[in-house]
Amino acid sequence: MRQKMSLTSCRELLERLVPRYRISTWKEKGRILDEFVSGSGYHRKHAVELLNHGIPKRTSKKQMPPRRYLEGR
Image 1 (cartoon, rainbow, N blue to C red):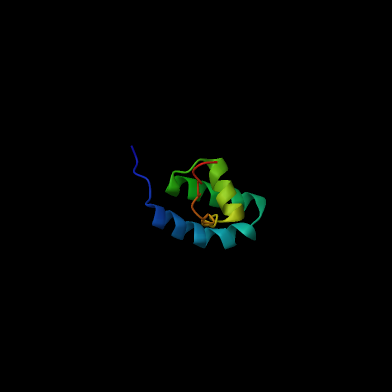
Image 2: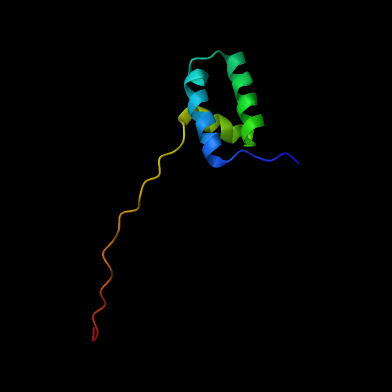
């Protein structure tokens, strides 16, 4: 069984391939997709999503103040 890339390596590869993928023709996109899938181990549909939209930015959740419960109500 083939070992997958580390997450950081996969992200570096993705950063290099995204600009090339966006300006490519249909056939070139297929080759780039094959290259990325073979290297990263991702499913093709997920790889297409990443190549089209890049890595999603993580947003932090808004921290809510703690709830206050009043006794006797």
